[in-house]
Amino acid sequence: MRFPESPALPARCAALFLALAGACTASCGDAPASYTQPVTMKIAVKGMHCEGCESAICEKVGKIGGVTACKASHEAEEVEVIAPVEQKAAISAAIVKLGYKLE
Image 1 (cartoon, helix red, strand yellow):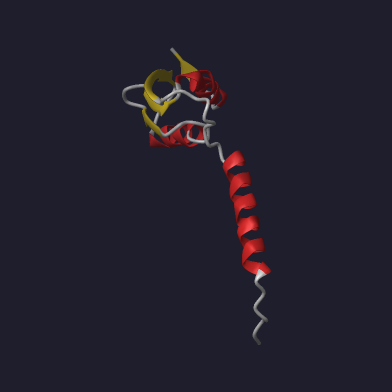
Image 2 (tube, helix red, strand yellow):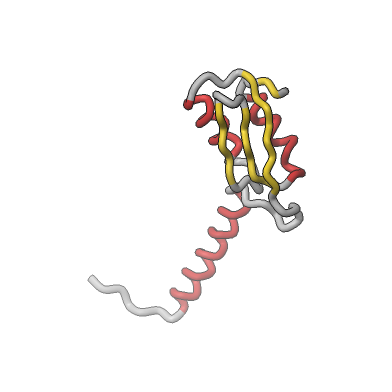
């Protein structure tokens, strides 16, 4: 079965795609244009015991708007994050919410 061609269909599909893409961008944690350039922040974190702890922290922190990278080390007791500096409070709060302590 073949559907008849409709010149309005591609335009409607494009409009729907753009609307959905905009909604995803708004809800997926993309950083607004008002953020400053990302910087590397090192945060001392107590309570990590293994790679699972490292993964949990980076998974949570990675969902914060503007975060472009996260690397945690339970051995060094440190989390290194690349993000706009104005996101440091949100990053710290996310780590504390997981049950870890900041120094």
